[in-house]
Image (cartoon, rainbow, N blue to C red; front, side, top):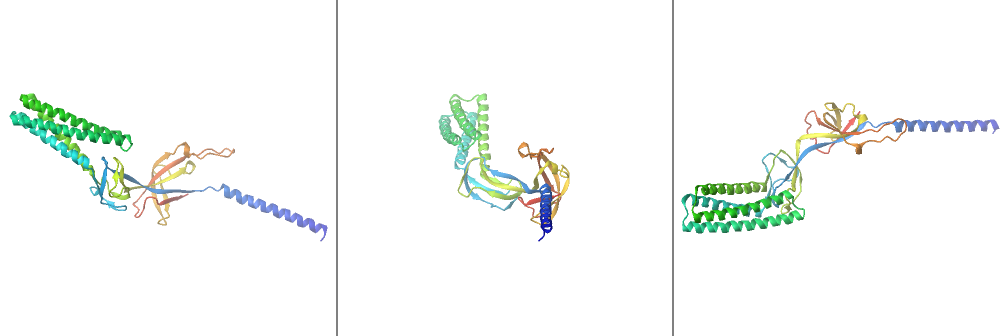
Length: 328
């Protein structure tokens, strides 16, 4: 092979290598610089949690996950023996107050005075039970099981029974001494107060039967039958399927066409079809979601916005968690 041929071969090899390097560089440049215009989000739904104002044991679950419930449907039944006992105690106290009112209206006899004394004994027994209940609630509060508000409610109930003891004693004294007009009014007020206490307990006991407050689908049931639930602990979650939307996290330089009130097309992979959606919420997600520029060529930081949009028309079969894709 001649010297000239070798020179030409080397030159061709260098040119070929240079061309390959340039080609790879161009392809890499355009590949790296290509921006991803796909925005992905997912379907979300409003949800509320069913909980009880009282700690108790679940004795019956009327629904299971996936069931659709309507307003007024019974969801679960709890058992709270202590509150039932307190209701009976307060009913007895109320009956005693009413009896005392009758005594003051009619005038006291020896037998009535003795009865008034027995009512004092009943009220004192009720106060003892209420104090024990308060002590239990205080222990639960110390352990972090219940809130301070519930501890305070038990304390208030305890103090209420102490007040009833004082009222019973005053009525006993009144029976011994004979009733005046002012005392008759006081007896009437005490009767009303004890009746109100009974009503409060009855309203609390209604919480042992949990009723659906909104129409929706049972998404989660937390306790099992026989388990104890704490005060205010969720028993189940219900998804309000009529209130559904899609949530997207969008960098601000991709917000074109996604401002509040704008309509856009989103692809639903689960159905393999497009749906129309309308933006109703747009909010900056804060500095923690800011895209930081890393180049020195004049690039700038970009914030991320949370965009929420609802389907323009009802979409049958759309479920929470399904993906939504926006392709610009």
